[in-house]
Amino acid sequence: MRILLTNDDGIASPGLRALAEELQSVGDVVIYAPEREQSCSGHAITLHKPLRIREAALNGLPVSAHTVSGTPADCVVLANLQEAPPPDLVVSGINAGANLGEEVFYSGTVAAAMEAALHGLRSIAVSVTAYQDCDYRAAARFVAEFAPTYLEMTLPPDTLINVNVPNLPPDEIAGVQVTRLGRRSYENFVEKREKREDPRGRPYYWFGGTAQETDSGQGTDIRAVHSGVISVTPLRFDVTAYPVMDDVQEALSALDITQS
Image 1 (cartoon, one colour):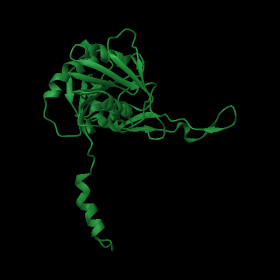
Image 2 (cartoon, helix red, strand yellow):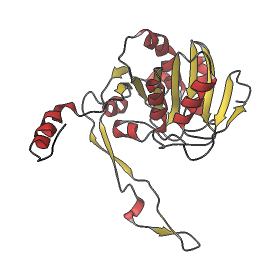
Image 3 (cartoon, helix red, strand yellow):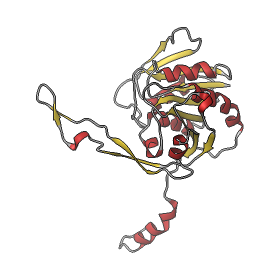
Image 4 (cartoon, one colour):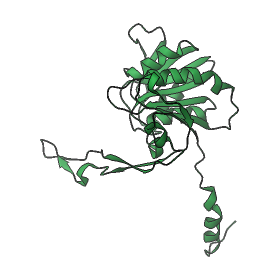
């Protein structure tokens, strides 16, 4: 198995190293990761400047590693151009911090896995639900155990797997569950909703806020991790709102617009 690893926390992330160490037991690992942190970068692709790839050493870890001067999605695109044959599996993570509910639309971790899926590659995004004192062991072990089975599954195109793992020691994980996305919005996303001034009197804003869980019911990714369970959510690129297509068509038909 050829495995490409990337992330949005950067090449120096301990989560990336934990994943690389564990996945060496199931395949040949190559790493293309951002040279610096790219959290919350979403699915950005760099168009306005050149991108550079540099070899990296991960303190004696015997894997081929490279830094990319761009986003997580850039890493996947460039790795696909550089590596032949293409990887059998792309794993993005292990991210420090959950990617639950609508966070998947902001996450560079999930975006890298989505970019891989758009290239026809099997992909997994994996996160732990803490930002500090993270225990990556359960997440790394789960991905290593799940990967061979995942590659044998029959799935529709443009599909990826989003995994969220409670920040617990492996022996305290309560199980694993297939889930749907919950809802998780942020209060006071722009801190204090007002501009501040730096020491030179120039205005600035600081994004932040507290997560508000508006749908954490049974079957959601949010409920699973709160219960100490690994959440496994299949995602797809197609976000079309099919149930309202007829309503929109009816509204359009009422307009006095010539339709070809």
